[in-house]
Image (tube, rainbow, N blue to C red):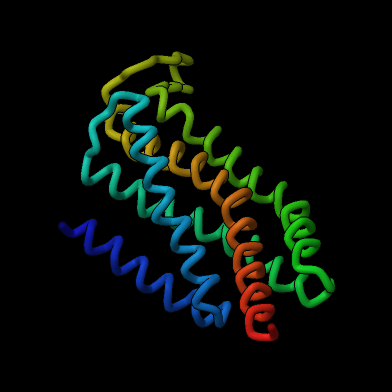
Length: 184
């Protein structure tokens, strides 16, 4: 119950900050949509790894995931907002945004996933005795949290790189359709 409330409060605070930053309900809701949809990746990951949804650790993983997903979408939409003022064509601005922000988004995802992979696979490296163990009791505590972040982030990266630019183009298509309908 506490984590559900904390997630709701976190989403509300993110919405307020995003509205102040972008001055656009569409951009703010697009970013929050990616956060909410990234939870689908969390559930897919838990199903694939046959783990139960632990409210505490998976919930904390979802909240931590939200911060990464918001960051990736902010850099994408902020770059788009900048480039649409520099180009005459919105489609060109979207393509340039994708080209410029592909590397930062993929690097964030790759480093996070690779950093959490030992926790997901329950691998423990003891540097003192120089042993690598798998499935030790001290790694089992973090498995759900790391699995939630890894699979949620992989799913959210797809959303960020494919769905977010598509939604930005969808908004432009709706604007053009509405202008044509009014002018005719």
